[in-house]
Image (cartoon, rainbow, N blue to C red):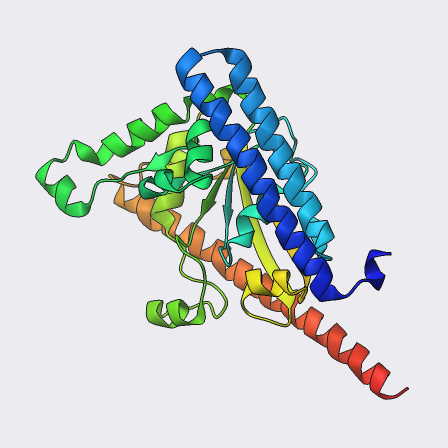
Length: 305
């Protein structure tokens, strides 16, 4: 029945559902977060994670209502009862919705910039769910006070303590910002479809979470449609499919060391991230080429009828 509806209608319904889903569950999470802060009851923490799970389920429903085909490749090792660090390319605000909508991934949490804590619903919800807000010292501040070098690690470790109580996927967008062609050109990125990965951010996350997680989930997001602006394409029903490819690497197979003090490890880890991003760039190009080839073949067949 849904296939008989206009694409623009499906897109509008899906977008409206996602907005309402965030408003409703965001307010519930905020209220529960204030109560948890005031009363300090374990039951409230469980209720918060229940509400957050419902928000994730709602995101899954919203994507389906939007008429988008979601194609996911997930390793069999990944379990809803595990703890993971997920790194991904970053293309759109829709990335958060897509990643949180993955049924197999345990409660997705995000490393957030400190200033985002003041954003209604997003920041307040993250605060209520004990997501870590990053307030890292600048190079100038560290030069004046070297003790600050490890302070951000210890502060973030402290904020991640609650992850031990609930299976969690901590998500880090390794590029640090959303991809655009202008940013790619400004960076002189060697990848035509990606920005340069910030190895320091991922190394920082691994340092903070090394004792808590089972492994690394290297994730590739690809949006397939007629427009480069992903959110607008979804709202207008012009987003055909979303491909999510996840690769799992256990902690024992990841490079280990102190990124801030060990120069050799820093070089090794930067090379490791660059290799992952090169593979990711090739994978994205292959998926897009296949999509365009299939689409053009279909249009050619229709034209010959």
